[in-house]
Length: 81
Image (tube, rainbow, N blue to C red; front, side, top):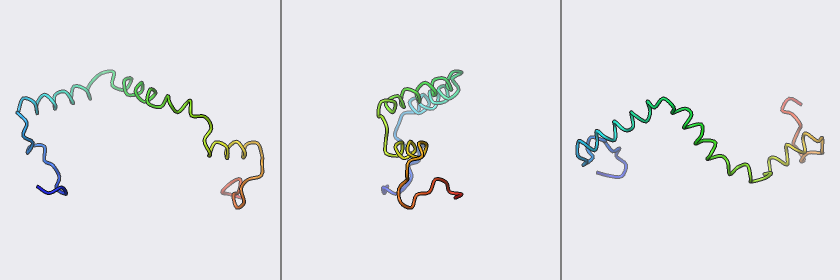
């Protein structure tokens, strides 16, 4: 098998009971009644570090626009100007 060929799950050398348990586990996970709450909580946890990064370069640009400071040469306040 070359590296460019797709892997067929049926070709994996796993015992049938393991294949079935992985499939059943995935189905059970996707059908969990609180999956949306779990995923929302996970997304909040994964984005928490971004709260402490401070201002990033585009934030300074937005701050300047809101304060009415002169912008960079060639940069207009709006696409519609």
